[in-house]
Image 1 (cartoon, rainbow over the protein chains, first blue to last red):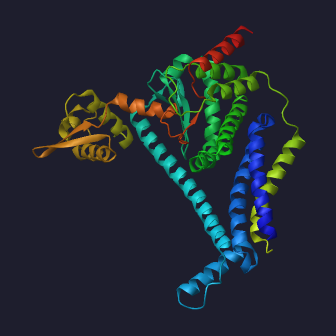
Image 2: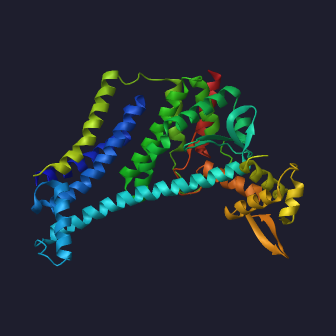
Image 3: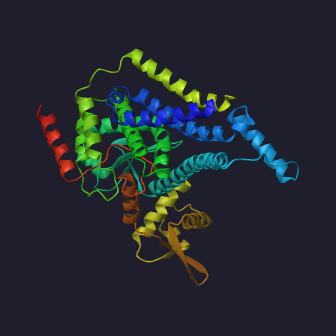
Length: 308
Length: 118
């Protein structure tokens, strides 16, 4: 029973932590460490929620969640073959077992579905680019799409491609374009798409839960800030800031229904950070964050093994 | 000889420029590269059809090929996704920044003016 209680407490703590972290400003001072913290919160929340339900459900077997799952499967198989009897099982434990397995199945399925959908969308996008985008001698290594709108993005993959629209080329100055390309190259090199994917998947599974939506939005912003930090090593931060403002306000197209309204907030947060950089989080604090994230990540798996 | 990818582009460009569906032979005649084997053209036309970029109709013993959609339609499709306007909050691309409009854009424009005056 101890494991079930601890896992339930851990899941609750993770949800509360995520709720607090979404409104905190200090993560902006150390985006990379904060992203790691978000990832460990997410993984631990999932494992702890499933684990708490299963630990309670499988308690009669003793020996912890993993051992209990194996014993339960073995006795169910024996029962199916006509040998022996299933242990008499109370309704609450049966409900917990079904709920735990369902939650696990939903989390895995949503992650797989998001992965597949993303992969398909990218393949289609890559095909279209190969037929439509052109190379421009002015921006070597970058694909250009002839459209007056402002667009600059990275199509991630084993061979990531950086794409800009013709509108972007005429909108930005030479230095600003360099800054934008450095930002996108950082996304491509550090595979930020893979960081964001599980959080986006979770918003599909639980679209009505505001903690989940806020988590996705926070991680999306942190990923942008991490790319900004990388880009400013290769360009003037001021030019990156003006590029952001010029780009963000270039809205030739009205925002459609259902898109996030956080657009200008996110842009302004990034601009302020670039123009007036605050002190970075002290090294000791960042090490503490990383250590905490690692300990958090191993806590749930250890509790799955805990026999009481 | 060109790579298949580049040939796909060339053939799409030719078909987009035409008003009427063309046969493989007619397409072959319009390609500048004279060394191209007719079977290569057929292969590429077939590939593009399977990918859904061309539609074909029977004309006697030959097939006639036409683009599935206009070039502009495909550009629009790319841009919708690039601007995250497909509505499904796709995680397929990592974008530089969200483009906003209305009062939100006004805030950004003001900040830009201030930054440039400093």
